[in-house]
Image 1 (cartoon, rainbow, N blue to C red):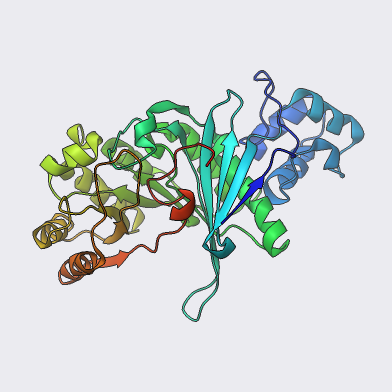
Image 2 (tube, rainbow, N blue to C red; image 1 turned 180 degrees about the vertical axis):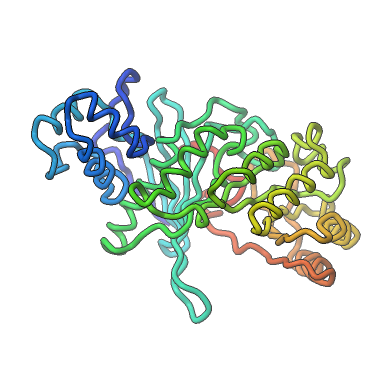
Length: 369
């Protein structure tokens, strides 16, 4: 495990009145440069520098005329996030970065690199935050203990991906690219729907990041109306639902949003998502000793998801200071997995990354150390 200080990097401007370039589509960029009397194609050039070359200093955008570079530097805010620290673990395959925001708030995001194997291609997944803190308040999640501070802008969401895209080029070479983005960091993404969706559009667009929407997965604690809205959108992103309990009584305690959107409504919204997108839903299930890990509860999970195109992802509970819950022993996790599989439902156990640096599922807390 090592810690890299990033304080030597150029600080981003904190002048709130300046337009932030990262987070703008090429249409938005074109409107900006044309309002300055510049030809519209300059927007495409700026987008390439930002979203494909990961250059955030206008002076380095060499194919732009000097007058435009100077105006961008003077009148816009290019760097959406200020990196504070970066920590690595898992032999350098997992990196967690802490970022400072313009209002002095802080967020974290994680890069997980998976080398190619005989069974799969190399993957480079970035887990990004969508809010500062979280209002859902799951008692086993460090982020939930922070409470909600504010929503992130589209630029702050995309900026996390761009930061790690640039780091990948430094670590693996210029051809290395982020292959997947999961909105599973701090916050409830569907509670920040407008900004999250704008970020998805930028990640998808060929003239912006160009990742493709099918390589983006949005996680939710169960905001059923927003799942329905997501299903109706034209870009087919993946959907992951934080389930964690097979009954309303237990889920009311573990995932408090369940008090508003009960399991029946949640599963019905997921069925609508599958019907409209033809994509399966991933159900995340953190395994907590003597709380939600009995064989009877495994059969209840299977019954709940019966007939739904679904995958269950069992997550060995990670340590969180102040949480009363303990992880389920491995033999019981495997038995739980087999019980679900016996019902014909796909079920795997997540291979956790980053727990040594508090970068695993449920551990992000936006603090140094």
